[in-house]
Length: 188
Image (cartoon, rainbow, N blue to C red; front, side, top):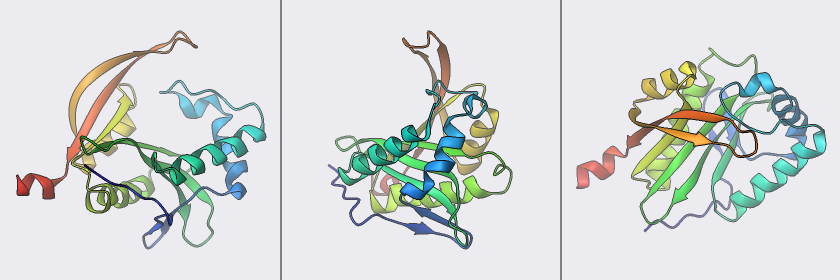
């Protein structure tokens, strides 16, 4: 069984990116992203009405990271520290050694290799540091950019599932993708 501890916070870096903890200074970026329904074309996420919701979000996320429920990184420009998106491993199942990947890029940051670079870092962290055996990702079957990104990283489609949101009344079909830890496969 896995034992996880995200203290101190595991910052990851590349030549151009810094995957870091959410900070209060990020509230404006988060509010601007989460207050625009266009950014959630393929998901049914509540739209923020005021910046206080962004501050609450930062607090909730950081508390859950501190309690080792999941790990969530802001994807930031290494030089300016401006956040460009986010990425997480959540739904971590300690008994079965798997977790779920979540990611999003803020407007104006697609097509620049940002998410591809961040995904490589986070997948490596999930397999090498947390020692997950499997990472899954759920995305709308209509979100071709996310599907293409997952497939380029080596994820394989497992199945499709229907999800009904009682609050909105919307039903969404998600494609479930997965990647297995090659190190674990070799040992077995």
